[in-house]
Image (tube, rainbow, N blue to C red):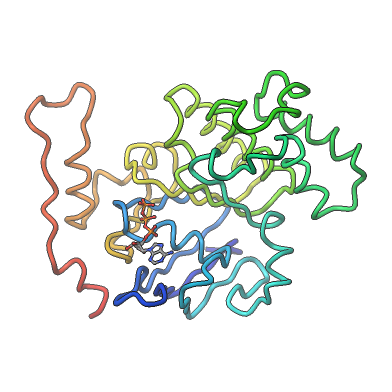
Length: 279
Ligand SMILES: Nc1ncnc2c1ncn2[C@@H]1O[C@H](COP(=O)(O)OP(=O)(O)OP(=O)(O)O)[C@@H](O)[C@H]1O
């Protein structure tokens, strides 16, 4: 891949005190595309995302390579990382209720991204914040600007978080289950906004999800994780030709509209899938 935004080679992560690695030998590159990371709960998806932002103070993180554009993420100081996080690389989390500060007005939280990273006045930051709230389809930005997080809906909160992240115009966005707390119509709106980011701004997007159907429809490529390692990497359109029995098992366990009404297959996990990474 020419000029990848991100290169990850043999990333291993062990939480302090844990008997085994939570992530083992994970390698991938990311261009200006949508890359999905799928896998069941505990497979290590979020741990990979947090390692990229260097948000794992209680874990040992090693890799042959962890490069983001011109930066070696393994060797950046915390002071350098503060200039990267939220400015060049951002993360959208699952539930705005836990990610927004409950005692600060929504607009002030969004504006903070600008005030922190750019030399702008408070009034300019307010104007840009209102524009960005409108850009993520919040109908009455002036009113929402002055609300507290508990006064807005989950879907609105998720769009507020996207607005916050967009203001700094990052090159890499890691979206960790960005729509799983949302109902179906709001989910589509949020996915459309993320899709527009990749198309119009040429960012790289990592979409972490346990929802195989969502990822196969939304992403260009998909990494399938199991027990801390990547068992298969596929173009999303080739998903039906998956080779690994775990991926095939996941696909067989997905209900399909108009599909057979026979009971869904139950995934039969094999111990050797865990061991393959160690060989
Ligand atoms: N802070 C932590 N300290 C110790 N172990 C952790 C910590 N966070 C995660 N783990 C362990 O690391 C492994 C991977 O967890 P991770 O949250 O990355 O999985 P995940 O695939 O994102 O799951 P989910 O879909 O439930 O978010 C799990 O075994 C989990 O118990």
